[in-house]
Image 1 (cartoon, rainbow over the protein chains, first blue to last red):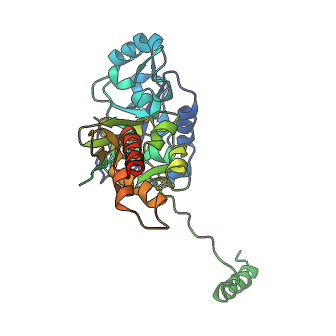
Image 2 (image 1 turned 30 degrees about the horizontal axis):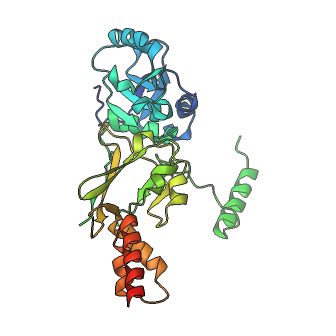
Image 3 (image 1 turned 45 degrees about the vertical axis):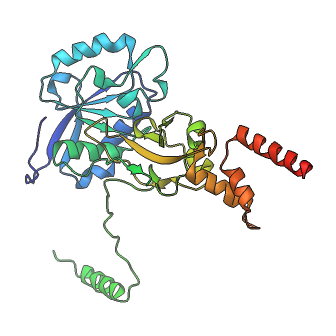
Length: 152
Length: 178
C-alpha cells in the first residue's frame, strides 16, 4: 500500500484509474461527481483521473465481476505493481450486489484482485468514497464495526 | 491617485456592520460525510423479536434467517444492502430504521455484516419450535391486554399449532363428560 504522512502540508496529488467492470453506471457517476465536489477544497488530497494503469496510484473498481471480463482483469492485474491500493466501490464490487445470483456473474472483484478497502452503498456517495480514499492512504480513520448481539 | 470617495463608502459599510444591517457570508463548512445525502442502517438490538418480516420483504435478499438449537440467527449483510428502507416500514417493533448518515468503509470483507441471536421458544409438550420468546410474549400481550390472562390460556399460548388443537378437543370432551 502507498502511504502519505499526515504531517505534509502541501496537497498530495493522487492519480486514480477508474476500472468499470459491468456496472449500471450508478457508481461511475458518483466517482465522476467526486472530482467536481466542493469537498475536495479543504482536504489534503487532490484527485486526478488517469488514462493508463501504469501512471496510477489507486485503482477504483466498480461493478460486479462478469465472466467475460475475467481475462481482461487478469491482464490488468499483471500490468500493475504490487504496492497499489485497490478500492472496491459499491455493493456490486464487494459481493456481486443485486446480480450475484445471475448466470453470468462470478461474484465480487476480490476473487481476482487483492482489495485493500471496501466501500458499501448502492451507490456510495462521493463523500463516502473520498472518506475511504483518505482513510486508506493518509490515516486509518474510523472503519465499519459489526454489531453482534446475543440475547441472554 | 488615492480615491477619496472610497473612504466614505468604507465608513458607511462599517456603520452598517456595527448595526448588523449587513451580514457577511459565513465560510461554508465542508463535512466529509454529508448526513442528508445518504442513509445508514441503525439497529436497536434489544427491540428485535425475530419475527423475520424484514427477511421476507428484502428485495436484495440481504437478510438471512436460520434456526440454531437455542437461537434464531439473523444475519444482515451490509455489503448487499441497497438502502431501500422496506425493512423499516414492515418491522412491528421499529427495530430496524434508516437514519441519515454514511456507512463507513471497512478493510475486511468479513466485517460487513450485523448478527443478532434471539432465543427460541419450544412447545411444552412436543418440543417443536413455535417462534421466539419475545414474539410469543408479544402475541400474548396483543391478545389479552384488555383483560387478564387465565392459566388455561397461558397453557394454550405455550403450545404449537397441532398440540393446541389436541388441547382444545380434550377440553371439549372433558366438559361434555362432566
